[in-house]
Image (cartoon, rainbow, N blue to C red; front, side, top):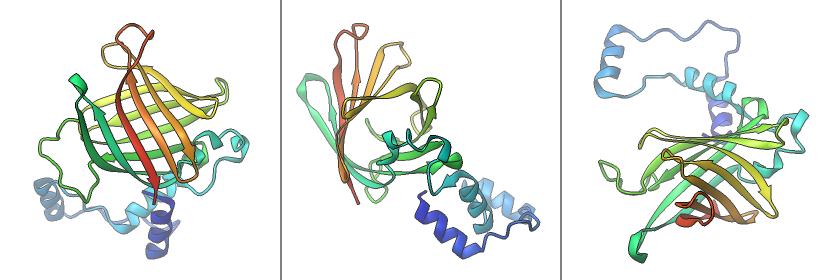
Length: 217
């Protein structure tokens, strides 16, 4: 959800601050929600979540540091290229949405492959995911905590992100303990290249597993 969504919801519901909470679901509505797996969250409840989570600007006490990822805010389309074994590749199309959250002290983004308007396999195919990153600046480290969650595939990562010249490099490990490196490179106001790499020799060398070529929309 983007800042634009936040503004649309605020305009639609009027954000009735200070009023009583929205009524609880009736037993019939709750039963139907549980049966079909859908959410019956009202517009008012959704706008409350968006209003509490999202921010229009970075926090003033660290605004000078938030630019490392601030350029990512907005909507992107991505061409995903998976580098498989034996030199073969798989291609797909995806999307990214990013915005300030938590009073502007963090940035959250949603990465989706394949894009929501494309046909999706059930169960998910190799490389399909629907996850979110919480990027939190830590003044003590002068670096970013990167928390990736993909409940579709039950994949979770914790990394530390820093600037490396004109690039951004995030270092961590995967579930086997192998070093993993995720990088933003070739960054411009309207495009970037993202690289996902893994090392099988403790970090001496890295193999490129996936790259995303992103364009702002």
